[in-house]
Every structure is written in C-alpha cells, then in structure tokens.
Length: 163
Image (cartoon, rainbow, N blue to C red; front, side):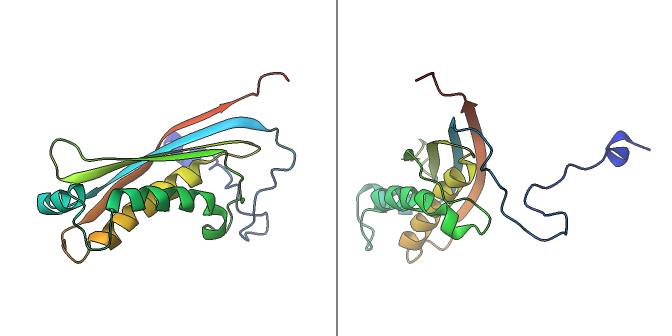
C-alpha cells in the first residue's frame, strides 16, 4: 500500500470530535508577530485597462476603490468567514499593479497582527474583495473579466522581542 494511503490523515482543527464544525480555541496560544501575504489577479480587456488608468469608468476610481475595499474586507474577515476569529489587525496594505502586458490587474495584500492566530484569511479576503470590486465596477464595459490565482504566497510567524 502506498505511504499516502497508510498514513493517518491530519485532524482538521475546525472539526470537533463529534464531527461538528467548531471555532478553534486559541486562548492558550502565545501572542506572536504574524504576517501573511496573498496574491491574485483579475484579467480584463486592454480597453478596460485603458478606462481604469484614465479614470473613465462610470463608477469612479477603480483602483482606489478596490484598495479601500480590500483593506475594509481584511478588517471584517471574522464577520464573513464563520469560523475565523475576529482579529484586531495592526496593518493591511493592498497593492494593485497593471503589468506591461496590460491584460490584468495583479493584486497583492499583506496583513499583520500581534496575536495568537494567523492572518492568512485576512490577506486572502483582501485580495478576493479587491478583485470583486474591480469586477463590479467594470462589469458594464467588460464581459470577459475573470478572477484567477488567489493564493497565499507568504506567511511569517515570530516571537516578539523582549519588552
């Protein structure tokens, strides 16, 4: 039998012994510096990219709105994802870049916290909502848009320096 079949699968932390979904208890975990970066992209037509860059989309400044929406979403992740802890994030930034190919907007979000649990979901949510905001603002002019590649790209966890 292959090793992968004989190994015991890891226990999912959000599943109680009874099989019910449950929130993980992090009350005994130490406060650490934690940072997560996620990325993704939304593919658009070049004419839509032109409209975005020249600030001619009817709903307003697309990239500024998407940046704010992503940050706001990161702060509210615990309200959106049922088993996520509501976290007092200490920093969130959302970067939106149109590459030279001019066929997409690349989105990168980084979230930070000093706390007992990570901020991966906050970074992923920021990217997702920023992409959805671009989609919403441009849907009247571009029926070919597609959101792709949303993923965690970096996770940092380290002890706090002594006080």
